[in-house]
Each structure stands twice: as C-alpha cells, then as structure tokens.
Amino acid sequence: MRIDKVLANLGFGSRKEVKKLLKDGCVKVNDSLIKDPKQHIDPQTDSISVNGEEIEYKEYIYLMMNKPGGVVSATEDNRDETVIDLLEMEDLVFEPFPVGRLDKDTEGLLLITNDGQLAHRLLSPKKHVPKTYFAVIDGEVTEADVEAFNQGVTLDDEYHTKPGELRILKAGLRSDVELTITEGKFHQVKRMFQAVGKKVVYLQRISMGPLRLDESLELGEYRELTDEEIELIKQYEA
Image (cartoon, rainbow, N blue to C red; front, top):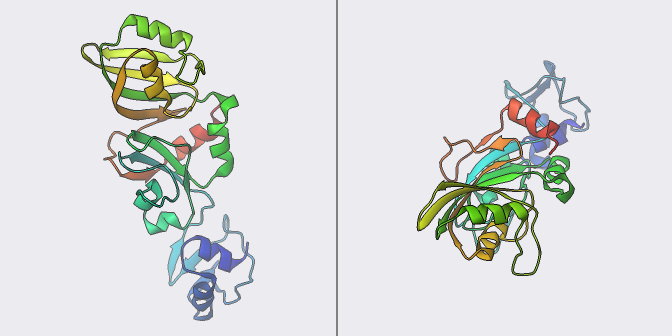
C-alpha cells in the first residue's frame, strides 16, 4: 500500500497534507526516511513513525457503544444527532458505520465498524443472529405471553414472527422482561408486545450474538472491542 494512503487512513490529514509531512522529512519506515508519497510499504509488518512516534496501522475498527436515547443509528441525518456524531476524530477517519439499527429512543449495545463483510454476516436474515433486549412493559406480562412469544406472534401487518424467548424478570402492573429474537423487523419488539395488548415503555439491547454490552459504559460512551471480542464475532456462527 502507498505510504500516503496509509497515513491518510490513519488520520494524518488529506493527501496534500500527508505529502507535506513526507516532504518535510517527518516520516520513517523501518528507520529509513521516506519522502516519496508513492512508496509502497506493508503496513502490517513495516515499522512506521511520524515525528519520531511509532504508529500502529489497522485496516478495520470495531467499536462497542452504549447508545443513548434520542440519537439515531445512522451515519448522517438532517434533523437528529447520529451515533457517528458521538465518535472522536481519531475513529471517524476509518469511516465506520453502525451495524444494523436501534430505534431512536432505544438504548444499549450497538456495534460500529468499517468491516463491511462482518456487518453483512451479522445482519443477514439467513444467519438468525440472536439479539437480547431488556424491556420495561406497561402491563402484567404472564406465562401466556411467554408461550405466545415462543410460538411467534402476528404483527399489525399480518407478519408472523419467528419464535422469541421471553423471560419475566419482575411481574406486576409494570413488568421487567428480557426478550431474545433472531429477526430485525421495524420496531419489532414494540410491535410484538402490542400484539399481546401491552406497551414497551423502556427498551435496551444488552447483547447481539456473542457480544454483551459492557455495563461500565455510560450512555453515549464507547470503546474498542478487545481482541477476544473481535475473534468471537469473526468466528461466530448462529
């Protein structure tokens, strides 16, 4: 890969700005000064330093965000703040995007990456990747609802969902539940509860496939996945 592309990908500026860095003698590869922007290097094995500081090249970025309510799961939006707006510039240079979407008012686990192949695998309907949500329900959730969800329910557009695993955490006039589904229809969790005459008043995604939300992340915070988490999602087969 050309050295100017490597540096641009790492956020050292535009191609023009990177060329100036090279011209000014700020860049070394394997301790040799590099001034030609067309110079090809192997960013995975070559040692690269800028202004004496060694840098690590990575092609892909994998971020776990605790998405807050009121923020949309998109790369850009004309009206609302997006999850991409919450990222630092050092992460924005990788041009990441959210894997799937959470409703605007839904909180919780959101994977953000620039790895298109991985995103496609996790979102493919054929993969049936399970997603687990914590929800607060206006109304008493019963064992009859658990059985109904286990059989799949019919939504307002006559679509019959695949089975969902519903667990009652706290019963009462306002119930706490966990629900695991393997689909991603529009507003699916809310519409499933509507189908049994109940209303979701709070919704949080707590897991997606092998990934679980890091509970130490405050709303709006994010972190890079650990090497172990990256390996888990790359090898995951639902």
